[in-house]
Image 1 (cartoon, rainbow, N blue to C red):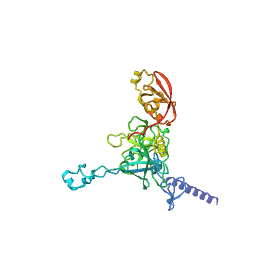
Image 2: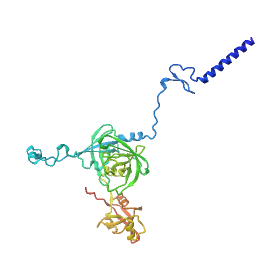
Image 3: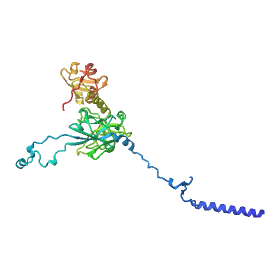
Image 4: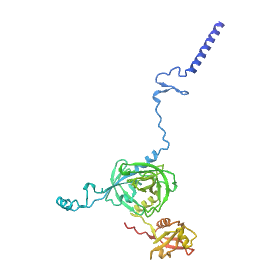
Length: 388
């Protein structure tokens, strides 16, 4: 009996050894039952559970675009064309005198309609856009990203910054979130949203190429964000946003010799746009400070000729007679160094600082006259409305 038990144990040992050897050579044995999939180190799962996982989206800005796009609108403007004299439609007149005022045909007349973009900044229906988009419009129509259309009324304009505010009367309007442009830096990724060439809402990507661009002679007050995000005809008034979908600027202009984008676009910063918008909504126009002077940049040549030890500040080239500066004692040839304690580096900064002053209030201005500094107390006036 003991001998039989020994033979049985040896046989079992040999069979188990053969099983482990075969399993090492054929790891997929035994075959899985139908309807299951086995993975190494995991329990069997039903075949129906093998669903493709969502593809990762590294470096995607779909969330930012999705947040901002509903608030960007297309703006269609039209201008009534002057009616032609009845004689110009008379076939006998055309027979003897030709088609006066139209060398080819009526179909080739200038199209009175134009395209632009805008940004909804309030659920109440206020929309920011460019002044040049609505400047000559008799009728304004707004088309939302969800397909709704509405006529719009002009609330007010500010030609000196090329901004305008219009308003629509619709419910459940998506409003964009205003960003912090002071935290923006050169190299930050930005997206431009608008309606280029009327093809429909379009998103382009680029970076901030520069901040505080001025002396471009586009607007009177300039503090542009420069970007290489593609901006074309029809993008004017659209949104420049950050990677969180917040508004950084209103797309306004491009530098181009061809009419198309060459990677040099300009947007009005949201800080300027917000100030202008609030003033327009409050009073219908923008109120700015004014002291009645003409200024000139301090160049190295002028600094040498005047014997100046500095090249910052603005030379007062002229003073309006009986204007605020004249009454406050400012003279031609003075160099304006600061406005209410804020240093003046150049004429652009001088203009911006004075414009921010409250008309009717007192402002302290430090000037350099004949190498001696002094302070002048000037009662700020209201900047005249520019002539069109």
